[in-house]
Length: 131
Length: 90
Length: 163
Image 1: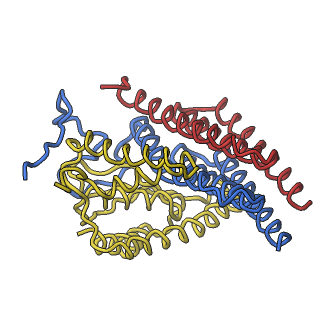
Image 2 (image 1 turned 90 degrees about the vertical axis):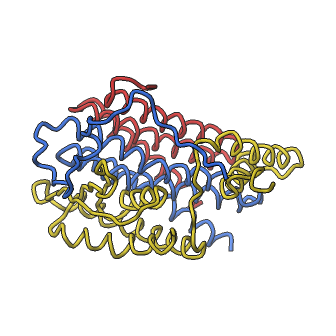
Image 3 (image 1 turned 30 degrees about the vertical axis):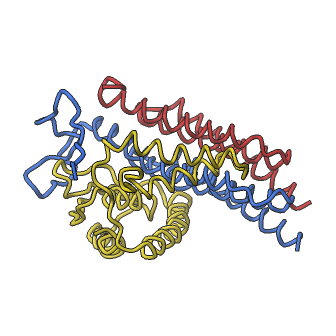
């Protein structure tokens, strides 16, 4: 039984390492900024995720109870990865010279990053309805 | 036994990843690429801290991993926001 | 009374769970602290969250999360194959505009997050009216197929989950 657990943890660690390495290799290999965004947001996040799950299982095997803090880190990384990607792609969108390479929105408003028409000086906070 | 080998392999993989990210950080060319490289490095370092935790069998490293992941995310967002608006807190 | 004390029951439950996971020991002190935080934080921040997200069915949400988890694994293998085996000039990336019908902000952000984590796509922006998502695809021989796939696989499910 302990043997099976060892093999499972080892397999998780090895796949995690390989995926993280592929993600970082993609960061180096791919051509333009937007393509490079794809590699780390997927590869590295899952690489770290498997390493954390391996760590959780290892704690359990040592008899310290199923440690759930690792799950918290995995959740945090999976929630923040799309936000990081969103911010970085906005930075990239602002840096491209030719905006006509982007597809039209199909409506009569521009993409939100380029919309400077009605930016309020103060942020508009939503009000609570009195019910 | 098999765990020791797997652990060394994973240490090597994540270490090599950080090296590759460092190359991208130095090469750039755009600021967005450098931020992305730093962000990936942070995620890889979190993984290294967790692996160190497995190697020593000491669960105290998770606080460090959580804090590192949080500061990494915040600094990425702050840097991108600065590039987008020229200001962090508006 | 209950509604005034707990304006956001889901948020309170989530805060309780997260604090409990952070301290990671089931002593009476940490349970009390988790309870205090779970009540005080939603009360203080309630002014910024005037509307509650309305979730029609929790099992559907859970099965959606499982589906996304599975897709993330598939996505990783696909992206890994593109990075490792595809020559640099064979990768043809494309921008895709996806018109969406979802209304709730929670549903739209969940959809955008899903798109970023799944096969070869990153959501980059949305139109300022909030009805069209801008998506970048790593390798898109057929952009229309990717758009239709997103609409039928993820958006249809989310429309059923969020009222």
